[in-house]
Image 1 (tube, rainbow over the protein chains, first blue to last red):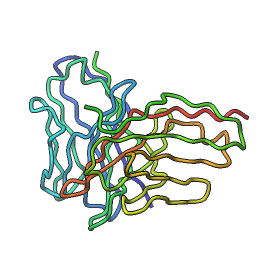
Image 2 (spheres, chains in turn brown, blue; image 1 turned 45 degrees about the vertical axis):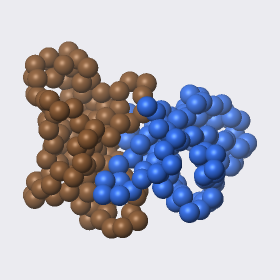
Image 3 (tube, each protein chain N blue to C red; image 1 turned 30 degrees about the vertical axis):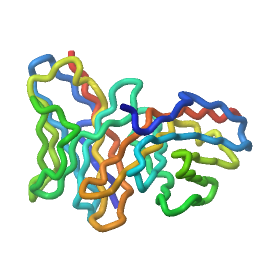
Length: 115
Length: 113
């Protein structure tokens, strides 16, 4: 009964490179959320996806960031042309589908370091 | 604009005593509140939640209290154990189509043996 899986756990990129973060939700969960935690801060919502659909991307920067959750395979958060300010822990969470379901279950995170 | 606030960055408690972690919010549209526990280098772990139609929810050693008029909630842990030492995040959601969570900045709890 695997939980939310994220890989890689650690990712180092140089400025200008691309970062791809992957998230596999818990079995039976069809909702995926991405959050970012900057040093000394709480988690900030970035984007909410269901299979093949972006439902809410209000927390995601308009440039360089994109997310997808294809019909098959994991959800991907993609950061193009990374900058030092992108260094953070990126957490994926998943939840079940249904009214009144609010609990989200988090993966271990991907720690991105931009040199 | 910090809609969910945890004003105590840290708290130290003796083993066996009660730990009380506090959280305030400003958005009256929030209708569901959650507490998460987080160890270093790990993801947040769901602890307990409460709907805005309730004022208390209990699960073992953990109890969450909600005071809607004061826009305040608290998490009580009793008795506290050294393994409870972690960062605790309060989160809120207004549900709707998104159900995105708005997090506080966290409180670092240290339970002293």
